[in-house]
Length: 232
Image 1 (tube, rainbow, N blue to C red):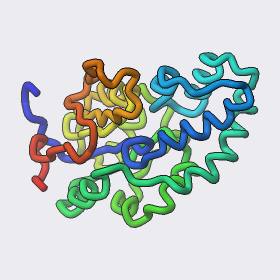
Image 2: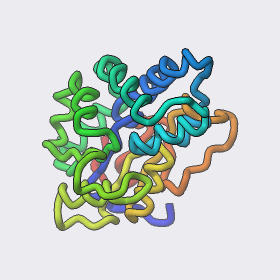
Image 3: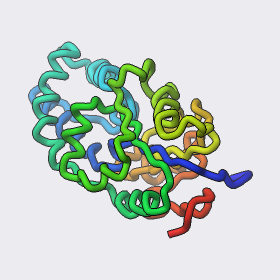
């Protein structure tokens, strides 16, 4: 980094970043694809990650040329998600980092493309961790979010709801998806790309940082002191 950001607030994506839901998304998708003799390609998944439901589903239907409408696919997916997402687990390093930031009174927020209803299902087993956000949760179906990621709207709104005096340069965004990093860039915020190597098209290829301030492969690697935050 050319200069060290002095971060005052942190904004977190949820799917694949706080919760290990990307494996469940893949499981749900493959279950729907099975009758068509198809499997879920990693290249398609990478294009879908971080997108709103409509955009992500349209990508899937087009890439795999499925004979389903959006509503037909989405109805099947929602039935499965209602069951499968209730078993979502925290990603490594999440609880340690969130409790550390909360202990030091660093404002934290969630900015997720998931709907409010799906957020509730995914997070229900981890209430004590999500309580640390003190209600600062912005979901993709929030009326204030006019444009989905990779537009910057959701991060800008999350920042405003944390503290009206915050500026983009005060905020650090944590994302696992390229679309989310692009959204953070558009919001003029620093970003940490947490690159889950299970979803790398080629784990041996040198990874691009997609314009992120820093790339790590797990939140366990994140060093808050580098960003002017209290050290562990």
